Structure formats: C-alpha cells, structure tokens
Image 1: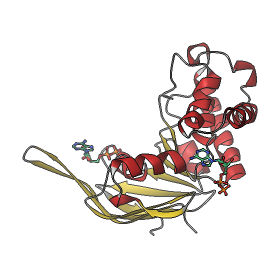
Image 2: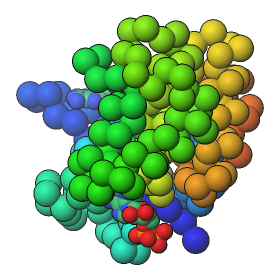
Image 3: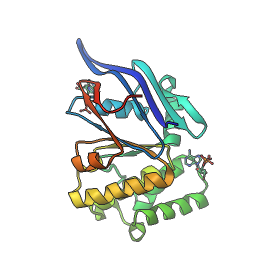
Length: 231
Ligand code: ADP
Ligand code: ADP
C-alpha cells in the first residue's frame, strides 16, 4: 500500500521565452510510516516534487495519487477547491523556517488545522493537549513562538503537521535552521510520531544526519532520479 505515488511526472516552467524543464519523468512512492528523503543539488527538482506532492502545483504530464481518508485520489486532475480539501485532509507541512503564526500561542498554532477541518471544540482541545504532551511542549502552550528556541519552534511545527493525523507529511529542509543536537531531537520526534500515526514523510534535505536516518533516499539531478528506488 502507498500513501503517495508519482508516475511519469513531468513539469516545465516557462519564464517568457525561457523554458526550464524542472522534472523529466519522475516515478516514486511512499509507504505508510516510511520516511523518504529527496536529495540533490540546488535546482535538481526537490521543491517541484514537494509542490506537486503537496497539491500546490500540478504536473504537465504524469500522475499524482494521494491516499486521503476516503481512499486513493488521483490528485493531478483536481480543481483548486478539491485540492485544498484533500490537502487539509491528507497532508501536513513542516518548513525550514517553521512558519508558525507569530500572533498565535503554541496551542493556537497546533489547533489551527483542526479548526480549519471543522472538528468539534472538545475533540480539538483533547487532540491539541495530547499532541503538546507528545512533543514535550505542554508547559509552553500559552507562549508565543518568539519566546521559544528554534528546536521548540520546530516541535510546534511538527505537532501542527501531525495533529490532523495526515497520511503524508511534507518537510522542506526541516533541520536546516537547527544545531545538530536539536536536529537529532527533532528527527527522533518525527520518527516516533510518524510511526505512532503511520504517517509517511517526504523530506527534501541536504542534511547528512537526516539522510542517514531516513528509510530510503532518492537522489535527483536535472529533474531525474539518479539512484534509489522507483515506483
Ligand atoms: P530544488 O528544490 O532541488 O532546488 P527546484 O524544484 O526548485 O529545485 O527547481 C528545479 C528547476 O526548476 C530549476 O531549474 C529551477 O530554476 C526551476 N524552477 C523552479 N521553480 C520555478 C518557477 N516558479 N519558475 C521558473 N523556474 C522554476
Ligand atoms: P480513520 O478511520 O482512518 O481513523 P476517521 O475518518 O475515522 O479516519 O478519522 C479519524 C479521526 O480523525 C477522527 O477523530 C476524526 O474526527 C478525525 N478527522 C476526520 N477527518 C479529519 C480532517 N479532515 N482533519 C482532521 N481530523 C479529521
């Protein structure tokens, strides 16, 4: 079973007369509970894959299939509204620069996806409390992000990404702004929480420590997979 599948995916950007082939036939899949790393030099296509997997962009050719709560969906043909609903249902995001909402407390940041999903207040409270316990931030629930360290902020971001129990977590250089000790803690947390919820992780990274701890890695060059496993 797979959470995410890309089949024969092509993507070309056009800047005026300039044509940039970003992905030239990419096949990959991620299984439940698996951490798959995407690596490769700048410009090799990592962000483009994350954007396609995250339903933020569409391929020119090929298929993107994502498993939501209602089963597998061919996501590349969805309109904006349907893509947004599927994204909220099935995907959590973790970013390099954390992207927390600065005017919200830790608790409010983690609650926000559940609020958007329309869950009842009592269930939201319970899930947020559970998640803050899981990431060790209960005592910071009422703090704003600017009162936290980088590692604590990234733990909030992981809590926010996982609180909906998404099938897929997309992480863009999640350890780039963390020192190596803090990065290790964040990785442990991702592994532990990923396993607990059988979430699949798709992670773009240059971080060797992170790469070493992923289940599998795919190396990209010029929009093609160099090594690693296909389909
Ligand atoms: P990476 O994340 O590995 O650095 P990207 O996916 O960002 O690689 O980029 C792949 C290629 O697509 C690069 O040549 C990049 O310049 C180009 N590209 C990415 N996004 C755009 C865009 N919005 N418009 C034009 N070209 C883009
Ligand atoms: P499953 O049967 O795969 O566990 P459910 O639909 O029963 O999936 O949902 C599991 C939990 O997730 C329930 O507590 C439900 O309220 C909650 N849930 C369902 N849909 C969403 C959503 N879009 N965002 C966040 N939570 C959701």
